Amino acid sequence: MIIEPRVRGFICTTAHPVGCARNVHDQIAYVLRQGAIPQCPKRIAVLGCSTGYGLASRIVATFAGGAETIGVSLEREPTATRTGSAGWYNNRAFEIQAQKMGRSPLTLEGDAFSDELKKTFIDRVREKFGQLDMLVYSMAAPVRTDPITGKTYRSAIKPLGAPVEIKTLNTETGEVFETTLAPASEDEAAATVAVMGGEDWKRWIDQLADADVLAPGFQTLNYTYIGSELTWPIYWKGTLGRAKVDLDRRAEEIRGRLGQDAGRVVALKAVVTQASSAIPVVPLYGTVLFKVMKQLGLHEGCIEQIDRLFRTRLGVGVELDEAQRVRLDDWELSPEVQAEVSRRWPLLSTETLGELADLAEYKSQFLRLFGFGIDGVDYAQDVDPRVVPS
Image 1 (cartoon, one colour):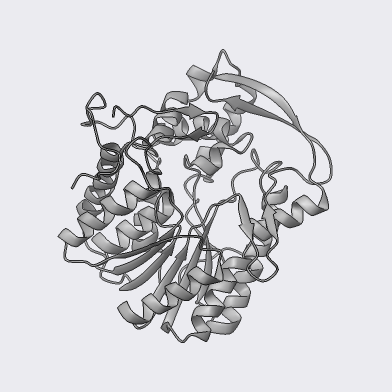
Image 2 (spheres, one colour):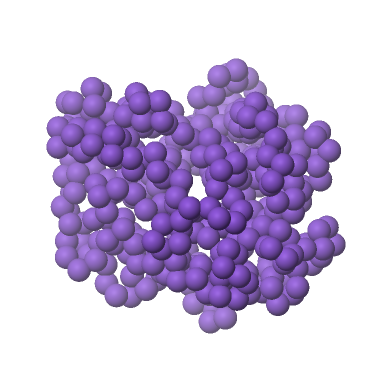
């Protein structure tokens, strides 16, 4: 079949197996050019391993750090007439290349929120590794079912307390407009914390510790985004911010059980993901931010960010902020970058978007998530959606 992108709002319902594989290969090539990371932990788990920062973590650990990895993600398999999820293709493209390098990665595809998968995971860790040196938590999901109560929670990305009027962007049409966001109810705020806070992360670590599959010196990282004052009305000061406070609290609990360096929240920069595309204001902020950071030579995608994390921010004695987080959003939040983004923000309109921001780059990065718009791929070629090229 000929596979084309089918985009509705912030969702792309198709993925290209050849494009996804090429995207994985390009990230591997970048990491290999940077050289080895001898200090990298050697037995690493990545939860949410198939796209974005999770996939980048697995690539850096494997191809620069020489690590063996076990990944977990929830994917959709392809059929003869329907494509799989981008993560399904990414996982297999990664495994093919890792095996060529002499690694033997293991991937579990299922609901990482469930205790059933946690039990299977523990069994496989015992068989393959004995113990883990590191676990990266890079999960992004709008819904979570509590394994104890069976209750399903749905996140609601809204402000708290009062309505917020905010500037946003229709990424399909390029229209910049003002919108008013209604505040979340207390139930919606609590549900967002249940999905996007640290409860499941802590549950993972507790079950792994109870099963004695954590090695001495074990460390776990949980990726988050804090953002700038321009995004705070919907982000840090909204339901998402309440979830992030919970995340910091859970990190402290993990450190209390396993040691002062065992659990860290890592604040990363803004990048294009399917999840972030659904948050009002974030796509507009991203189009401006990317243009400014590119002009200043500071722009990073997922693979560049995680490569810098593993090379410069792991281990004991790393500089932390007041909440004991590791900060990789330092370039995004630098005074030089934020001053220029803030200067452009009030000037943004549908008419000035092309001059002040980079919508084309944003759209390009969004399509790349699904294997489209990648150099060297013949999108007019008939492909079998069930086959990942080697």
